[in-house]
Image (cartoon, rainbow, N blue to C red; front, side, top):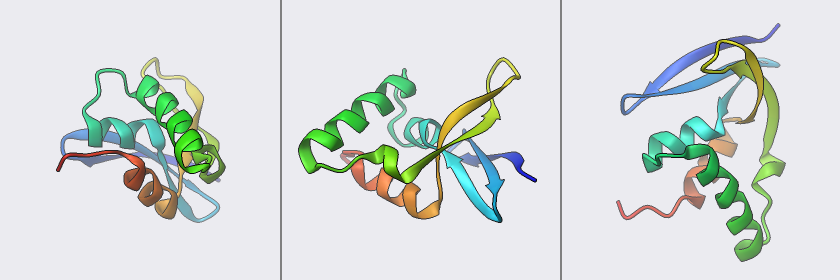
Length: 97
């Protein structure tokens, strides 16, 4: 059974789900928390393209589509990454800090 929860990072909600006894986190939420982008879905989309073109690495390969609650309350398929995948996503975000 999968259990969806909310975690907070720097005041930003990050949806997470327990899938096969492992926590998986919403990639878009992680991107939003780290970049403070006005449109984190677009940022995530462009980031996947950039990583593929620059490094030949497909970020989608470390993600799994899992159902998480959306802002409208419905369960929607969302790109999710496990802890190792989240670290890879973090490494792919160009941060000045």
